[in-house]
Length: 188
Image 1 (cartoon, rainbow, N blue to C red):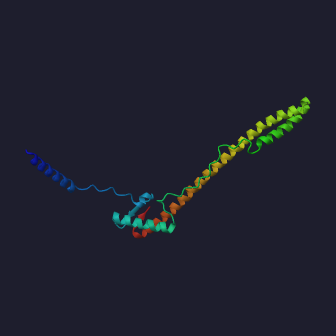
Image 2 (cartoon, one colour; image 1 turned 60 degrees about the horizontal axis):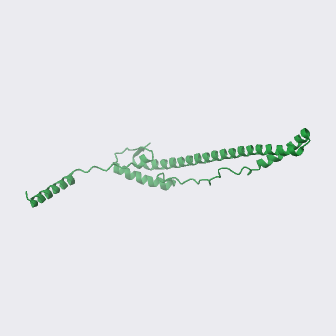
Image 3 (spheres, helix red, strand yellow; image 1 turned 180 degrees about the horizontal axis):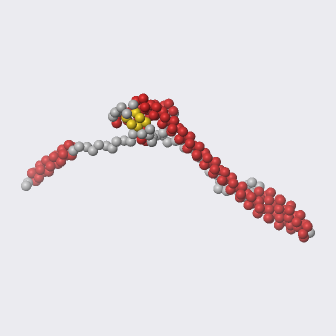
């Protein structure tokens, strides 16, 4: 076979192959998820509506419910304002617990030192040291309690936000269903 014959034969085979591919049935694109399914709802076309008609009606009812309720469930909820990052730990003497503990310890130590040793100064120094330690312990307890309270408040705020978002979604779904039912759909 000559070179020209090979080129002609290759060209003919290429053309036949392209025509075969062009005539092959196209695989249908996967159907997009209906709006109602995205909302967690089931919509049945009770009057024999086509899938295209149902998609159109759902789109219209989505827009209507969004306009009536002011809620768009497909839009992400607004980000909650995050509280400013709290310092990991306050300075130990920030609440004055150590200073108060030192003063109480010094006073008690002075009295005890005077009675026991006739040396109020030595007793006051020992009492002040013990008071600083006790005050530091109280300061840490106060900081832990404040941190726990802040955590609880943040959890409560998160729960309240979630509940409010769910109420808005429920309101939207009621509007969506109220729009679809008169158009001949059963909504659950």
